[in-house]
Image (tube, rainbow over all chains, first blue to last red; front, side, top):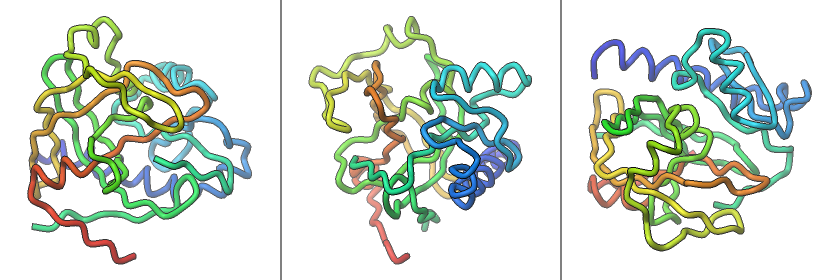
Length: 81
Length: 132
């Protein structure tokens, strides 16, 4: 893997780790039931519709492909796959 | 060779997760993905949010081969297309070629994540060690 690819993956993993560690904080900040985009360990966009989140991210001149976007499930909600 | 996994509480319980780069030629896709490793799933499927992050249009999806049988997920049924021989890159540890399903519609009310299924483990002759 070239260095650039590795950087993309490591930055993404850092943001995913931030999301999972701060899920409680995100719920406190009313992100429950929304998709939230995390970039550089900060939420930069959120909405109930993922398409809107992607539009907000693009307006910030950031490629959505590089951004960690995840749904904030309510506490206690169990998703069976 | 060992691929490091993460274990996070997510959507009601601990989940085994792994990150990789997904690459595909046509339609063009190049993006990092975080997937749940699910040994209860025979297939690997891209989550809607990840598909949308890839900015692939429905017109581009039309060109892809459809999977005949719908899959059951989240209490509903999903029609899917097939990304034949998509490239999955796990840091410098493994590059794998795998058929990945992509949903062509959304399941109302839920957003299933990307799932890395048993097909991936079989294809790469891997075993899962879960010791959180």
